Image 1 (tube, rainbow, N blue to C red):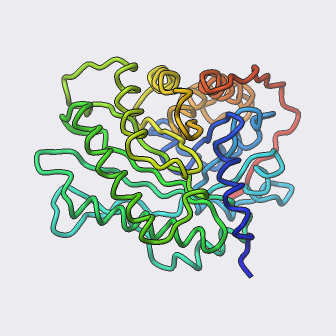
Image 2: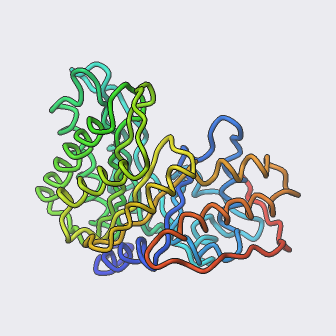
Length: 338
């Protein structure tokens, strides 16, 4: 018997994007160069009081699931006890794509069934896999788009086979000189191919959450674009490409600060969209908290307050708006052990 009943996957997917709350990603891109104690940051986020008022799920690195708190609970158990859906990243990053210099393909497809079965038994409810489309003079190539879409579909099908919900990141690499319009075109191409591969693999879209990027220009581009135009381009793509059967969307804004990310999220809240649209933010939310907290136990409260402010700002623009979140001073300083 599967570790999780497969019939529950659509309900889990709906819960992941509903009510309206967001998703916090702690899967490696959340830390940045300033602080690298990932176990302590995961503990800070997982134990933020009443975070479930604003957050549906938290994405963890798969390697962190063996860690235990002083009371013996795993990270997944801590999140579940706080009313949050625990997720894990299952890909291993990008690998150079043979035959296509400068482009990459998602890694970590070996032993997928065994790994995902283990995650399900450990209490994980959803898994993430990230792909990025490179935009350049000869990119994205058809070979790169097809290769990454096929890997995403393999992850999604394997996840659903063991009762997990796949949360599929499909974005555009932020480096480059491309315009927002060119980035939007590349994003549309990648999403179209991903959805075709999901269909070929027999993936149930009712139990899939897509995490698309937004139509931003490359970092080396001289283009200046308003958040309203970024949101317009992004929504046009999503409305054109994404089927209504998909459980929901959780946009990510790689490389954006919180002001820009929230502005785009707010302007993308089109009431005529057929699916719930929320956020999956990593460093965008955690970087401000890290700057205040700096890894000191006695500053955990201030770090949690800063995190709460960030998720409040993001959730305030979702339909319908959420009430304010108050973080009381802590009385529990439980730490995780490595």
